[in-house]
Every structure is written in C-alpha cells, then in structure tokens.
Image (cartoon, rainbow over all chains, first blue to last red):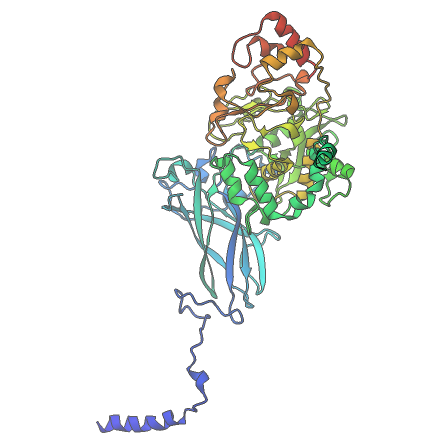
Length: 218
Length: 380
C-alpha cells in the first residue's frame, strides 16, 4: 500500500509537468513505415510514404491450344512458377514451331502519388475468377517488366507512374476451368492481382473480363 | 412567302462522300474519346456477341483500356529478294491527297497480324507461287513484312495488302491465297483445311472459313464480315474495326497511331471497282425482278441482311458463337464481274456458276433471262 502510494505521489509531478499547450503530444499520427494498421482504410500520407494504385489497360489469358503443357493445369500442377514460360525466345531464331501457343499477359499502369519511392514492389498473387465470381485458380506469375525499358518491376519512384507488362501462365483448358454455373462455355475470366511493396500495404488490381487469345485475330 | 420558301428549298444536295465525312470528323476520331465510344457502340449492333463484348470492355473507356496502350511505330522490312526498310510517319496529314498517300502506305506496310506459320512461309520462296502469294517487280512479297513486336522480338506479319489485293488490283480479294494449305504444311495441330481463297477468322473452334472479300465500295456496305458482325454506321465504324483488329493482332500489347488508321480507312473507302454498270441492258430488268430486293442498285447493288435459309450456301459462319448474328450481310456486287470467287464459302468461281446453281434459293431462271442477267452482271 505504501509502495503504491509512493508511486502515485511520484507520478503527480509528471502529470503536473505536462504543458496544457502541448496538445500535439496527444495527437495520434499514422506510422505507415510499419506493418501496423494493414487493414484500415486510412490513406497513406504522401509526404512520408508511397501512395500506390494500379489500373488495368489490356490483357488476355493466352492461347495454349497447341501447347497445353505450357499452361496452368488445375489438375496436374501446383501454382509454383514454372520458369520463363512462353515469352522467352524469338520466333525468328527458334522458329517457335507451334501455331497456337502464346502465354497469358496483362498490361497495367502503376502510379505512385506519394513522394517516397516504393521499394521492392512485387506481385504476390494472381487469382482467376469465372464470370460468376467464383475463384477457380491461383495462376503462376512468370515476370513483370516496364513497357518502356524492359526493366523488371522493382522500385517505383515518388510522384511517378509507369506502364508494365505482366506475363503469367494462363489456363491450359480455359473453357472447362471458366465454365459458368449455367454451363455456358467459359471464354472470359476476371483476375484479381495483388501487389505489395516493402513500404506499402498490399493493394489490388481487378481486371474486367479478359479473354482467351484468339487463334486468328481479324 | 411559304410557297416561295418551298420553291426555293434545295432538294438536290449531293450526299456527302465518305472521304468528305472523314475529313470533317478527323479531330473527333483523333481526340474525342466519347465520340469514338459512341461510334463503336453504334457499329456493334449485336453487343452480346463475344466479338463485341471484347471491344465494349476495352475501347474508348474514360480511363485505362486500349487507349492507354503504347502507340506502335510502323518500321518494317519487306520480305523477298530485295528487302527494303520502310518507316511510316504517324504525323497527321494536312490535305486529302496526303491522307490517301499515308493510307496507301499503311495498307501495304502496317503489320496487322503475326503468326508463326507466316514466319515459316517467309523462308520458303519455292512455295510462294503455289500458295498464292504475290510479289512486286523487285521480287518482294506484297503484304508480308518483318518487324519487331512490342517486346522487341523479330516477327513476320500480314498487312491489308496480303489478302485484299490481286494481280495489281488494290482492294480485290486475293482468291488464290491458300493459307489453309500453308498452315497444314506448317504442321498445324488443328489440321483444318480451308478452301483456296478463304480464311477462318471466327476463332470459335468451328470450321467455318469464309471467302476473302473485295474491299470496293465499302462505304456503301451496311455491314461488314460475312456474318454481318459489324454495322457500318459511319466510316468511323471501319476505322475502329481496323484499330481493334491491329490491337488483337498484336495480342493487346500496342495500339496503332490513330492518324495512320484514319488514313488507312480513308484509303480503303476510296477504293473503287472501276466498273460501269450498264442499266440499259435488258438484263437489268431481270435484275430488278430477281435480284434487286436484296442487291439494291441505289446502294451500290448491295443491301442489309439476309437470313441464311434464303441463300443456298454454307450457313455455318452465321451461327458462330463468336461472331454469328444469325444473318448474312448482303454484299455489294460492284466488282463482281472481275471476281473469281463467289459466295461466303467461296464455293463458286464464276457468275454463271452462281446463276446455274440457282442463287439465292436454288431455283434457276429461264435460260433467256439467265443469259440476259449474266450479260448485265458482267458490267458490275
């Protein structure tokens, strides 16, 4: 009891020493440099952190008619990346040798409206949904590169934006995988792409319907 | 006063040509997203079709979408004995003549669609004649170009001139092209056979190749594509079609310069069959009775839509899950006298064949009428 009283007595001067005008000490400021507050909707402070957003430009789910082993097969493999995929190589050099064989691809813009560079920005998942809104797959990412320079996605400077190509494994059997509840032949899906930086919370890019790449486009 | 006003009313205004319309609306197409969006929606009269949905989902959106794609620079090399490099400007022309000259360059050199089998064909000059490919006086293929795709990879692509040019006639269908055989030779896993002069463009996993069409008098067509997938609401419908065709042909990774597409469209609508219909012939009277309900003289001897059961040719394409509207377009007959392929399925090879098989329904005309009609059709 005496100890508690002593503690209380000791605390009084500390309380008494607080300046009434020192209100700023009591204002909570958001610290976006930590992993705290991941799930709240507070907008990051652009002065001290990146403010990232992405917008879909175009894309397709690829065409694996003549090379189904190169696509994502829900029954046969895990979602682990399988290497460079179909986008490496030059048809003039290796002749491709296959007619309908092109990997899936999405083009998107990334904007950083904060003044701080976003570091080690990366795509963490690519979820595929059918047009009923049912998730049907996690698709493997192959690579992401800047449209203008070909450089891999990494850091995004403050107050800047860029356009990127994302290459990934599309469904080898899209029509079955994307089949709608009414049994309609699945030609389109919706992607939910999640991105994250070391100094920015995860954010998402949702595409509109994107389609299997045509065999013949005219 | 009212009588005078009526008497003074000018009822003889000539309809505006497609080229004049295009010159008037150049700024709209180049700079007004909402205008292009309205034109797109006007042309896609069957918006539920997958072909239409793709475009409605992506073209001329308030933000993002295909408009945000990087613009492609046309810098190509011809394929053949004396390859040359061609770079086409994307600067906006200032006169009609400049627009048409630019359009002609784009017609021959813009890489519309790349394919591995084309790259293989480019290395097989001994097969070019056999497959219906045509060359210029320098020994370079017409309508096939090498270029770097948006990822910087060397590719080979077709241009408009590959299919829509025949023996010096720009706009005429190259009915000698045997792309089905070319693909089969390349060893396509699909192994579908396309008759000479046809291409399967529907991508619906149904074998429905259709004849390459002539490009004459396109401004008078009410619809384009054999299954009438696109309504020609204005010349902008064609421009938007060419724009989206390029974008799809480059796997949605780049878009063409709009100035170049507008020029190409202006060039295409300027293509004329260079024929003189002779309506003084007795066969014109037969035409009026037997043909004009679909092939209307006042619309360049073309029309709107025809249900497939009214026509004796393969109707598969009109039921395509990708593009089928349930109807055929009724094509213009101007230029028919110089064609070598007829009907949507390229099943007939002369106007006489067409009449003798009883187009459209199978019933043939009395011989005298048939001969008179044939004589008239040979002036179209």
